[in-house]
Each structure stands twice: as structure tokens, then as C-alpha cells.
Length: 286
Ligand code: SIN
Ligand code: FE
Image (cartoon, rainbow, N blue to C red; front, side):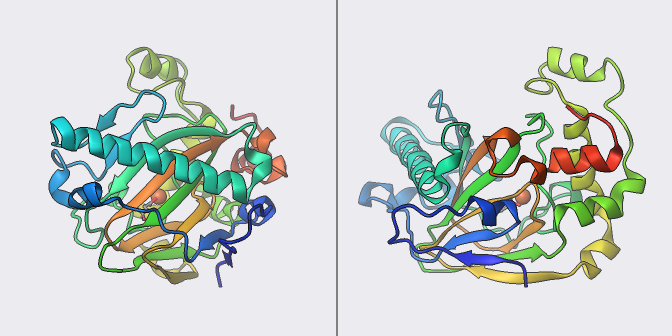
């Protein structure tokens, strides 16, 4: 069984960092994010502006993207995402207080679309097992730690699949297919042209390949040991999505907050994928 650790929502401070770093998904079965009466109408995929997979919010600038809303509805939506960004930070700092000094809060998202019916290319299809890697936002060795909350108004669970392989085993299986890179000069050009926000490091390059290779490998998808889990409405969960193989199979109406954490901010930096890959490939990646 993949490791699901149920945390006690009533407990104030719990140091679950070690469990997270060992690949556990920390589940808070009853830790809902309250939707206010004036926000209820926003829990609807009709608020999307186009083909985007989710509504995205930058808690540093207040910029909201992906919605076709104006006036008061737009401001209500912005405030709802801002409140979720704070909810997620509070939950994470209560769960792993030691992370607080080094934690970097990034994008907040609201995902009102149905996961099961999306038609996407395999590379973009998060119904296939994968590790997260960002093409446009290089993490440069930092961990990707995410908080999710299922807010489905009719109480439907979000259905995930979680791989049992640890990061190191998964990476070793795909290591023969990893190509060195990015090509000299290319990372600077992509950054200068704002194709990437900052420099794509060899670590980012390797993680993007692992993301794609895993999704495109039908034999791996079919055969890798995994478990399906139901994440109830009203639940929140926290997981390192750069090291825990995951796929969202079905569900609607979830919030998500992304955090980045430098390996030095972890309990055990040796468990960071960047360190594992560096020793596997025997070269510096950032
Ligand atoms: C993902 O990170 O792959 C998608 C998770 C979700 O939306 O439930
Ligand atoms: Fe993902």
C-alpha cells in the first residue's frame, strides 16, 4: 500500500515532515475549506475563460487568471483564492512547522472541471501516473510540495492513483533513457525570451523528461504497482508531487496550493530528488 498517513485535524502542531519526505500523502479527512454563501456560484466550470485546466492565482501579486468574470464576481473569486492560499499555508505550517522559514508560496489554483472527461495529449494528461515538473517555471532543485482540498458541493470524492515506487527506483528504471541537457546556451535563450521564468537547470531538464517518459510509457502505466485512493469532499491532503507518483482519475471542484522548498529546508536534504539524481548520474544538476 502506498503510504497514506491520516493526520488529526484537531491537533495543533504535528511534525509530519519526515513522513512527507519518505513519500507519504498526509490526509486530513475532515479539514474543509469553507465556501462562503457569496462564493457558491463560483463553484462551477462555467467561470472558466477558455480551455485552461484551472483558475490560477498569484498570492504575491493578486493576479487571477483563467476566469471569464467581471466586476464583483471577479473580486469575490480573487478573495476566495486568496483565502485558500492562507488556509493552505496555515495547514502546512501546522503540519510541518520546521519548513516555515524556507517555504516559498507559489501559485494557487481552483479546479472546478471534471477530471475524468478531459481530452488531452498524453503529456498533459494528469490521469496518467507522473511526477510534477514545470516546463515554464524551473524549480532549480527546489521541492514541489502541494496542498489540495476537495470542495465538491455534493460530496463526491476525488479519485487518485498513487504509485508505490519510491523516486529513486522510478528514476533508476528510466535512467538509461535520460538525455543530458539542456543544450549549452539554450537555457539562457529560453530565459531571455521568457519562455521559462528563470533558467532551466539540468535538474529541471531531467525531471521534465521523467514526467514525459513515464506518461508516454504504456507498459509502465499498466504494470507499475499502485493503489487507487478516494479523497473525500471536505478533506485536505499534502504531498510532495515531485517524488510521489500520482494521477488524478476523476473528480471535480478542488483547490490546490503549490509551495517550493529548497532541499536545505527539509528535515533530510538527502531525500530531495535533486540529491538522489545527482548521486545516480554522478554530476551536478543545479
Ligand atoms: C495532478 O497534480 O496531477 C492533478 C491533481 C489533481 O488535480 O487532483
Ligand atoms: Fe501532478
